Length: 131
Image (cartoon, helix red, strand yellow):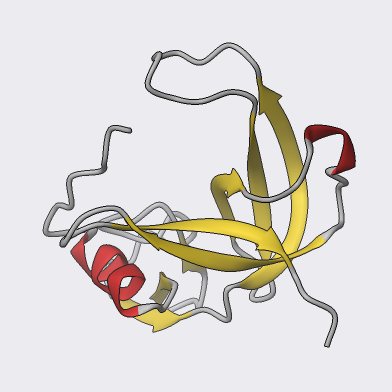
């Protein structure tokens, strides 16, 4: 599949994924969490952003199942989810290991890192194991 190309702005996110840590930007002025990586806070427009670690745990906020991919390199069906992380930010990703008919809004999930190359590790999600 096509892999992302890290930029100077997004590199801390991708470095974190490679290290097994989901990272998000946080505004030092208003504490808003910012994702996708941005040069300034979308809430207060401060440029004082820092990278912080996320738990990687959350719930499915929304989802869709793709049966007809935009590119033939993607195997179908696959489920695209918007995950609401415990810290309150949202991330778009794929859900692995769940049949499309079994996906539910509100299901508890956790990040599941998959190394795709020496540089890129993708953050997917899977259902959270009962502890």
